[in-house]
Image 1 (tube, rainbow, N blue to C red):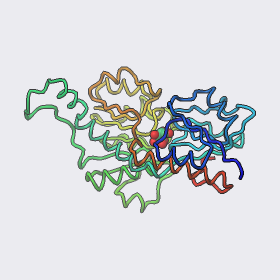
Image 2 (image 1 turned 180 degrees about the vertical axis):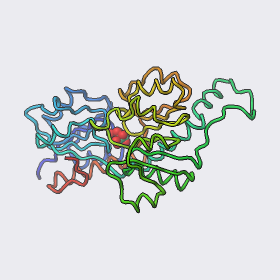
Image 3 (image 1 turned 45 degrees about the horizontal axis):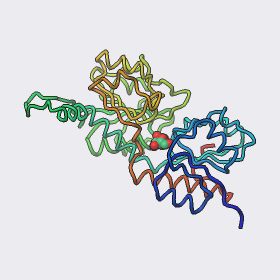
Image 4 (image 1 turned 60 degrees about the vertical axis):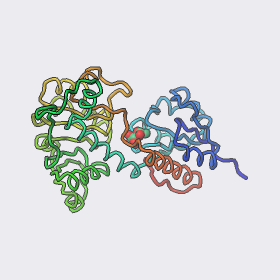
Length: 324
Ligand code: 8YV
């Protein structure tokens, strides 16, 4: 019998996933769930056949240069892979896979959660009630902004944005507009009631709420900068379930302070797990700790999808979700 491939699993995973990993691989599980750090990752690359890694592992060219390298695959747990220098991986003949599709609905649900929570002041209301400050119902108490029937602007129109458009249009009777340099087929967008705009700026100027759904790349870094934030309608809200790097967090703080931007619902940050202290002090922002895909069902499905890529790779078959 040939030896089972060794897989370093960089974080704790849901139990059913770890069970299958231990069954099919010589799996080095991370029972105490401490991030490996650069040295631990370099060691993993030189002593294992593959890494099952995730967003908290910074796999830049420096770490990927570990020699003599044994690993041949980075099976990422997550759809986003901006924490991996994929060009450096490719140059070294290191394959990379991710886990698309299975987290689309959970992430779209969370974008709607943030939209509703921030516009209807749910976080603020909860804090108010729990603090004992609530004196009872009154017609002018904590009035928010209506979501139903308004215009939602989507930045990017990939899988997650389309799932958000479906919810917004069919569930909340919203008009949705979007910009994507690689738009979906016109009939696919039309089925979701979504109208394309040629320029991002048109989306920002027209929408009541803007939700970000583009990947983090050098091109999208600080896409939402001070100039673009200034294009948003007075009273608009910004939702980010994509990546923190897409927003200039300091410019966001300034836009919120200026009062033109009515609020923001954020799941991701520029320097996770750090959050700008100014945001922490604002009532009109809803801040979640990167929970987009955090349902039991989805995290198990993500693990199973990473497992599928690992199995295919070591069978010598093409990866299902090849990044490079
Ligand atoms: C993950 C995500 O929880 O998949 C992604 O890109 O942002 C989240 O679903 C996390 O990033 C794991 O890598």
